[in-house]
Image 1 (cartoon, each protein chain N blue to C red):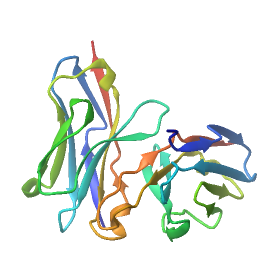
Image 2 (tube, chains in turn green, blue; image 1 turned 180 degrees about the vertical axis):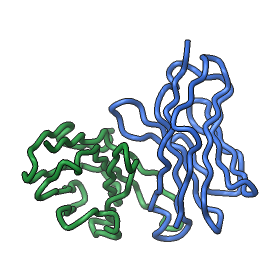
Image 3 (cartoon, one colour; image 1 turned 45 degrees about the vertical axis):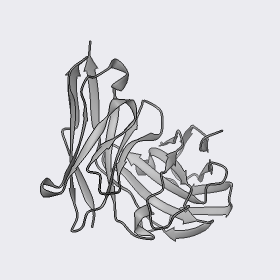
Length: 117
Length: 116
């Protein structure tokens, strides 16, 4: 079974350009998470969805960031315009929220390494 | 707000030696606690989790962790280090509860190096 798929794996862009990161969760999973990892701030949760609906976007840094989940098998994280401080590794994770009263393991994708020049 | 502190950003041990990675959490009630491992250029993988009354938790690859409420700690151990254990390890915490259980807060990570 394929794990979480992210594309692209690496992205290099210039300041001011629009960047779109893509994620395909594990088939059957109904929760999806976007994280950002930097040396300075570590691993931070940006936003997560349950059944394609955004539940908590309090970690989204600012209005330049937006995330969508149009269906159960696809999500995007968009940065417009991008800035050098957005350079980081962005991870997508998914889980099967079978029991909302218990913890449900999150499975992480390999990440997208974004460099904004 | 929940938080975790990992003591030591880098830990180096010899192959065959005991591995001890430290994690302390901040919470007013017993939370869920986790250890994840990240190998170079890969995503995070769950090693083990504490979500119930069993305070000693066994995970994959011979790792285990003990939840100590009195010390607000959840240290990760392995009796004998292997070269393949070299990676970065993250402690994480979440609240219990219907929605908040989904929000993980990660520590800064500890990079484990194994010396031959």
